[in-house]
Image 1: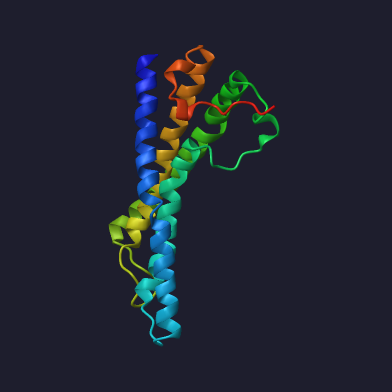
Image 2: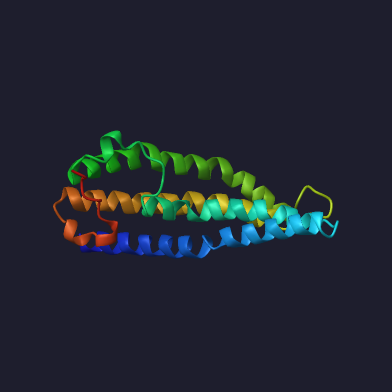
Amino acid sequence: MNGLSALMRAINGVNRLIGNVFSWLALAIVLICFWVVVERYVFSNTRLWMQDLYPWLNGVMFCSVAAYALYANDHVRVDIFYRPASNVKKAWMDLVGVLIFLFPFTWVVWTYCYTFVARSWGLHEGSANPGGAPGLYLVKGFILVFAVTVALQGLSMLIRSILILRGREDLVPPAYRYEPVPE
């Protein structure tokens, strides 16, 4: 059980680090978008590579922080049954949800996007816009990062569920435990 707890903590640590680093892209996106507007309307100038950059950074940010959102329980969930449930029921719901929905979803994303991403990398694909940014293949690579990090966070959720069902909630870090049931 201690080995599972260590693996869960390592996965959580990696996804926390990735989430904290890549969430700063939100600031970069706002600043770049602001500058593109200023350049266009104040200086009557446009650089297509900058117009490509902020939506690309948005895609990178989304793909990178998705697992962190899953870790922090900031994803969309229907809380009608989950919120009032006991920790054991939550553990069962997470266990079933990860095995039936999350793992197959990440497998489908990986399987169907791998060729798409590999082709883009092989071509060193850039923007479709003349004068646009190079390196679109790097952005597309984050689709696979998304699949791997979300699957790993699903594994962490699975481990948390197993530990709770085995009565070893003490091995789950306090920040990763289920929230208490509101009364």
